[in-house]
Each structure stands twice: as structure tokens, then as C-alpha cells.
Length: 437
Ligand SMILES: Cc1cc2nc3c(=O)[nH]c(=O)nc-3n(C[C@H](O)[C@H](O)[C@H](O)COP(=O)(O)OP(=O)(O)OC[C@H]3O[C@@H](n4cnc5c(N)ncnc54)[C@H](O)[C@@H]3O)c2cc1C
Image (cartoon, rainbow, N blue to C red):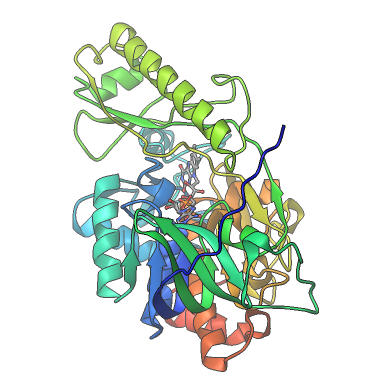
């Protein structure tokens, strides 16, 4: 039997006002915040946990797949490339040198496969993909947002939005396309209670589309098999252990440490809804139990793992797909290779060579809310195109584009729908982003 309570009205303090509010500090959100701040906007970045990177750090998904088109040409640059350079300056990443990108040489391909930098079906070539250390990523990210003068707020969950004066939580009226309304505030819940941030423009980089959902935008939702990556250290000889083929694991930038991209459809019995806390609870318990079984198996059976130990298990389940925005344009598999007039980012495909998606501005653009953009894995694409657009490099790229587009809307005092996309593209080129034309 359904039972409900009614919460009393509550006066909620407005703790900050800003030009651009970015919700979610994964690869997309940090990139959006930095891009907007570098254009001169006053930016607040709110993240529910205590670190930046989302899946790209806490999720231990520590492989940038990929910055190229599969034919040896770099097609993601901008802030993703800058992140690689910042990590490289600290000796915290590993990737093939440019002269090897696109090379078919089997020994080279095998070398990079062992780092997790080659996936899919062949004939294989060397990709411009990058393995890195997650703690270094978090440190670089904190330093970088501080340099950009982004106001960072950790440990707050976006839990409500105020659309044009009304709390969306109790507002069942769905805005129509002709009746676009702005979000005026986003409400966050934390140990300090409820707090609101007032913003001119908002970027939803929550991965699950929490903000656009609360604002009444439509989405498509997938249920998926969860993963839980983990790392082990103290492996005696990683090369020999890999050659023994007793498990599926990659080298990392730390000697004797390996990354386990653990989890697969056949290992957990059912798909889960990543927006359902009960499903998440089930998956957390089940995946951790299975991770420990795998650790025990590796130590008992795989040569080199006898004295190995568990370094860490991802802080978040590896779930890449939940809600995807039903935006102004839904990019589909059939759009592969198609260049749009409003392309604001491009990406290759991590398992396919030569498959490129050009992402239009309309895929980060909601249909109804006038001051909201979306970035990262929850943009408007279909399930197939999502395989490519969800990756960390395109998350950086759509974040950077959304951050810059928000500042263009701010300067023009216009809705996000009325933004001059040509001017956004010019700004993106000026800061080193790669665009097809
Ligand atoms: C198992 C698996 C393997 C993958 N392998 C690769 C790979 O090898 N290479 C690759 O490039 N990509 C890979 N991906 C994809 C990639 O990791 C993600 O799609 C990408 O990191 C998404 O970035 P994002 O910023 O859009 O989202 P996320 O990383 O999910 O970031 C969202 C952020 O928002 C925060 N947040 C969420 N809700 C709220 C809220 N309500 N309030 C405040 N904050 C909130 C979260 O804490 C998080 O920090 C993989 C994904 C999975 C699951």
C-alpha cells in the first residue's frame, strides 16, 4: 500500500548566486565549469561527492578512449588534451606517441592492448588513447578548477529545481515548447540541510540527467548490467601474469599494479535502473561480493598474483547509461560520419575504426527549459550513438562546448535556444577544441 507524508513548506537559504551553475563534477562538469570560467563567467560547480572526475576517477574508469578517429587523426583536443598534458607533466599517464597512431604493427597493438588502449574487433591499429592514475586526476582537477576561479562546492546533492518561481517537485505542469521557462534556482541537500543556488544558466552534468528530469524535460532510460572496476598491487611480474591469460586486467602507471575492468553481463543476474536506490543497493552488495571472489581466484590461480592485494574498489558502480535527454535533436547511429552545421564536438568510437560522430549543439539542448544545457553521458543520443558519445574524451568535449555556449547566452541575455552557434564554434576553435569544419 502506498503511503505518503506531506512536507511542510520550508524557507531555504540562497547560499550563492552565479552566472553559470554546473551540477555534477565528472569529466563533463569539470570541463564545462572551467570552460565557462575561462570565458569570464562567475561559475559555481556543485558535486555530490568530495572529488572531481566522477566515473573517470572514483569509478576507476581510468582510460581515455579515445581522442582519435581510429585512422590515426586526433579529433578531440581542447581541455581533454590539456588534461592529458597536465597528467603527463606529473608522469601520471601513458599513451602511444603520435607517430604510432594508426599503426597496424601487431607487436605495437599488443603492447597497447595490455594497457587497455585497444578494444573491439580488428584489424587493429594503435589508437590515441590514454591510461592514467585516478588520484593524480583528482589532484589535477582540483588544481585546475581553482586556477580557473571556479567556485567549487562539494558534498551537496541537487534535489530540486525552482522553475520560474515554482518548485518542480510539486509542479506537475510540464512546460511546452511554446512556453519555455527558466530554472531560477537549484536546491541542494547536504548535512547543512537544504540550500539553494541562484543562477542565470545551468549545466546538467550529473550523468543521470537529474536536473533536466526535475525540470520536466523528457528522457529515455536504459537499464543495464553494472560493473565495478578495481585495482590490485603487488603483482610479481605483470607481463608474465598477462601472458598466462588467467584473467582480464591491464597494466597501470604504477609498477606491479593492475586494473581490473571487472563486471560483465554474464556475471550479475539482472539489469538495474541506476536511478533506483534499491537497485543500486542490490548491485553494490552483489558486485562487491563478486569482486572479492575474483580477487581470491586470481591470488589462488594466476601466476604472479600469489602475494597481490586489493588496492581499491571503485567508489561508484560502473554504470554508464541511465537517462538520456530527449533534446532538440537525438543523434543516432545512422548519423555516423554526418557533419552538422551546428557541430560543437566530435568523437571517434572506442571499438570501431573510422567511425566518427559529430555532435550537434541541439544534442546538448533541452526542448523546454530556456536556460539549461546538458553535457556528458546524458546528452540527447540514441542507445547506439551513446556507445561513442558517453566516453570520457567526448564528455570533456561536450562539457567544454556547453560551458562556452552558456557564456554566449549570458552575454546575449538570450535563451540557450537562441544562441548564435557559429559564434560558439568560433570560441571553441579559439581555445583549441577540434571541430570538423
Ligand atoms: C564500466 C564502464 C567502463 C567504461 N569504460 C570507459 C573507458 O575505458 N574509457 C572511456 O573514455 N570511457 C569509459 N566509460 C564511459 C565513461 O567513464 C563515462 O561515460 C564518463 O566518465 C561520463 O562522464 P560524465 O561527466 O558525463 O558523468 P559522470 O562521470 O557520471 O559524472 C557525473 C558527476 O555528477 C555527480 N552527480 C550525479 N548526480 C548528482 C546530483 N544530483 N547532485 C550533485 N552531483 C551529482 C556525480 O557524483 C559525478 O561526479 C565507461 C563507463 C563504464 C560504466
